[in-house]
Amino acid sequence: GAGVSQSPSNKVTEKGKDVELRCDPISGHTALYWYRQRLGQGLEFLIYFQGNSAPDKSGLPSDRFSAERTGESVSTLTIQRTQQEDSAVYLCASSFSISGWQETQYFGPGTRLLVL
Amino acid sequence: AQSVTQLDSHVSVSEGTPVLLRCNYSSSYSPSLFWYVQHPNKGLQLLLKYTSAATLVKGINGFEAEFKKSETSFHLTKPSAHMSDAAEYFCVVSYSSNTGKLIFGQGTTLQVKP
Image (cartoon, rainbow over all chains, first blue to last red; front, side, top):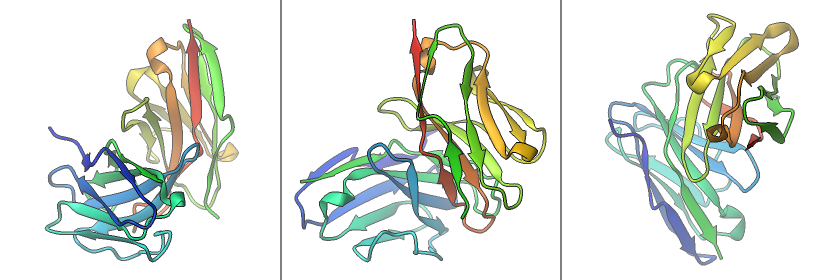
């Protein structure tokens, strides 16, 4: 079956521009997660969705970052007025549910964002 | 603060020799523990996970890890390294039953020499 997909795979943008990153989770997975991986660092948790709801947005780095999810499927992560420090790989993951901390998260290939 | 520490940023082994990648986690209550692998230009793949059943967990590709509560460790091992094992390995911990938040270690790069 299809795994988690993300688009675009690579994005180069100029400082100050807005970007939108897309994630398609595995069909039937109600939970969706966004992470950021800066060069040479581990993954940083950004936000999660249970269904279409994101109860805790405190992991987002700044108010330039926002995320939404519609129809318990596709999610978009939007970065407004991009800065060079936003350059990173943005990873999306999904799991069957969020009710168990033992749930396995399945990761997409990521979107590599470079802000010039 | 909840955290996970991978003790080696880089490990180099010869093909056919054992692999040991070390991981320690901060102790609050029993977490779920995972090892993920990331090959170049590929997504993260789950190797194995510990969820309070057996303390010795077997994963894919011959890897296994042992949960040792007294040492707050979850080291990853493999008896014999293959060239295809060369990748970045992440030890991951989950404490929250409400958010599914995963806390990642900094990663260990495994190099396998012929």
